[in-house]
Image 1 (tube, rainbow, N blue to C red):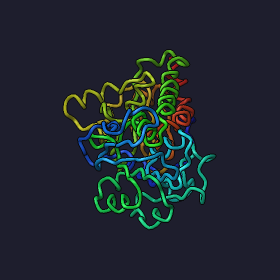
Image 2 (tube, helix red, strand yellow; image 1 turned 90 degrees about the horizontal axis):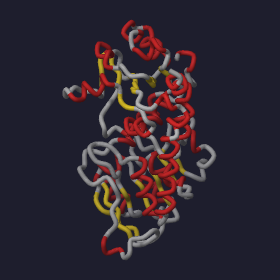
Image 3 (cartoon, helix red, strand yellow; image 1 turned 135 degrees about the vertical axis):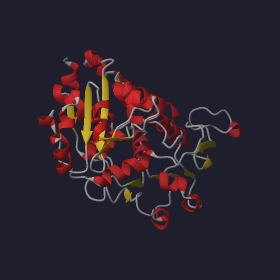
Image 4 (tube, rainbow, N blue to C red; image 1 turned 45 degrees about the horizontal axis):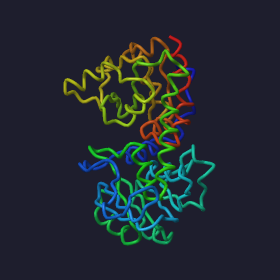
Amino acid sequence: MRGARTAALAVGAVVLALTAACGASGGSAVPSQATTDPSAGAGGAGAFPVTIHHAAGDTRIDKAPARVVALSTGWVDATLELGVVPVAANRWSTTEPVFAPWNKDLLKAPETTPINTVADISVEEIAKLRPDVIFGSYQVTTNKNLYAALSRIAPTIGIIGENNQDGSWQEILRTVGKVLGKSAEAEAAVSKGEAQLTGITTTYPALKGKTVEYVVLRQPGTVQAGAKATDHLVRFFQAMGLEPAPGLVKLEEKGGETGFLSYEQLDALDGDLMFVGGFSDEEMATFEKSELFKKIPTVRDGTYLVLDAEKIGAMRTPTVRNIPYLIEAMKPALEKAGSK
């Protein structure tokens, strides 16, 4: 679907680096959901104190925080969804937009301080903001000295996932709900987001059961794709009624590495839809000119969509707030595949 290209890759590699950092977890095999300390009383909605179990340990929250620092896109979006504007949030890009584009009406500098979470995080900058709680990033979780320094400023929560990934957007939202004393509101937001995803096959019934792949260009001659059940984007597609491309699933079942494919392995991309993006227009143009690319079924059928770095980065980390943004971006390919 060459003519359906969205905006050029203006944001570039920085966006992908930021979103990739938000999705890794350092391999801690801890429960992915927040847990409530049995000594915390009844443990109902808004009950304090509450203890959150995460990849860096356990953090006790004694009362609902008013001043929140959120250092990953998932934390930021969950906080905003529950009606709290953070005093600091991770930068979406080192250029523009400073914050994620779907939050442009809610996050403004200097009211919310942008924090670069790819480079060294400034403890001093965060301390000046006098936060009541800090929702940490991959860097915070895996750097013991940084985590300890931030914990001296305010209760600090590391990433909540396992198996080298952050928690799902639902788990993140529920965790923030417990911390803010808004568990009921968090459950309502989860239901709303899930309904938006399941509604895709109501709008396009022919999509149900169709297969999909996402492809991100990496170094020359290599693409990133995936079919792992733990991949947040795979779960995102499955919630929409779509399944991973059979070729990628077979590679996974054989013990192959579906994370990175050479151009000679592009025959594994045999799904009904494909979403693809890269670091530059030049790289994308070279990829599209290759004969191997032209043989991919979605290319022959016109059911692939080129997305800019901003959107392909957002797809790698679905959140409660970017679901409508992503559905709108994907619409040209969904409509085309849904009509077949």
